[in-house]
Image (cartoon, rainbow, N blue to C red; front, top):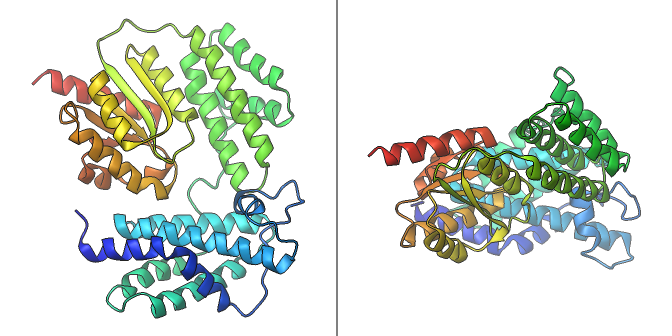
Length: 378
């Protein structure tokens, strides 16, 4: 259980995020740079998010909305970092947004000036007993502002046949050739590459690379959506070709927590576990905590897998774990957490009642098997 001061501060930051962001922007004397021109096809990430937020034709008003949205999002991330005691995660978020903005022509000094203004506002507006903790997190982000965020380097390598296939698959997608992308994968399977290897070493790495490219404005939203839809269709065909191992009686229930709309990774994990002899119940994206608890009681799985994409979904993860543990079958089930949002949170998720935090499909499969085997041997 987190100490009361952290809980109180996190609540103040989250509930007051919009007002605090507006106060900070009033302190920035320079007009600053726009986060992106809505008419530019390459305006993605933070710039694309704000395009639909404002119908203003006044460039200054649009610019204010963009920066206001960006600072509000950082305050929500700061709130979660304080609540979970993970300042390093806030540093990562600031570095990512700096890199994303810089790739869109916004100089780092523009973001830094606004974060420094935000620091001043926190000192003025947050109760004196709590302000130093918030400022300490922000100071660390400012001190480590220019480091590279994790995952900045390209994900794909030409050193292996699978890496070259992944690169060719990605090129076909980015050229808008869904048929060629599909044939590359299915031809490889016809030539003897196991479908599970395609999942592990081609499709998932290619999807991770797409995510990196999207953040850095190397592709636009439409291209990312087309790529994801193509990969989802290819996975469906691969799944039909999977030859599952003999069922071993192990049961996995997997879902993305409430607020997490990304379920491609969830489906990949479900397919791999099923091929390895598990019975899998996949609930997909954005599953409320209460429904997870009910599903655990109904299906009585051996393991529950929970997917978290964003740092700001960690409080929802805690609620999901609590709901599962409070269910009738909950005390018996093993809970594993995965996804980019939970990276590096092993001790945290264990404190909340989970049994582990995994970084890959294979790691999750190995740990799930070990936990179930350990339980059955008792």
